[in-house]
Image (cartoon, rainbow, N blue to C red):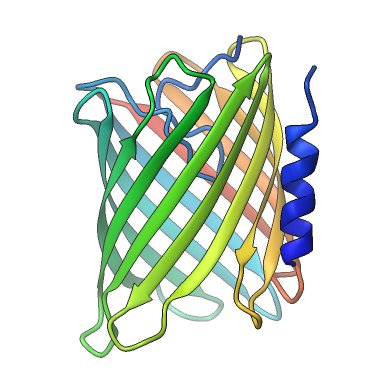
Length: 230
């Protein structure tokens, strides 16, 4: 799994063919970048995932994203889950800070995301998450890499990763591949083919289909609907 992660990084770094950035900064589905919203801009986001293994599961994540400053954005999102044959269950709510450490006009970008997830059940632990974000843009290509650490109060910390590469066509459509998974010895990973489209000045959609590797889900459909309301 680690070898696959290194190979993908080398492959994407070797593909050299003025990137059009998403004004909301959500360039991928499962990979974070630090293309933050402009200061004062606000977005409503609905993420919906359909995951199929022996039984299916639907995950829904409503969120609000706000550009607080030129270098920081604030997001609050909630997690809901519905398993096959069951009812929709509230899982958690999480405020998060997204911080860009490099100027907006640089091709190379570096940033951090800090999240605190409040568990919805009293017998479950809150979780703190920290993500290091690297990105690079050249011609019509965008490459991003995440390294994430999660720690619950009464459990050992866990590490995972995400890598994405996308190619933009015109200024409002793009296609790409995303790889994400766990760096733990018993973890799994998955690969996703995605479409990223700005359908109007205020409305965008990201959608992809993926499959598991090393014991991940059989297949999944993942999507995000983004609407600028301010």
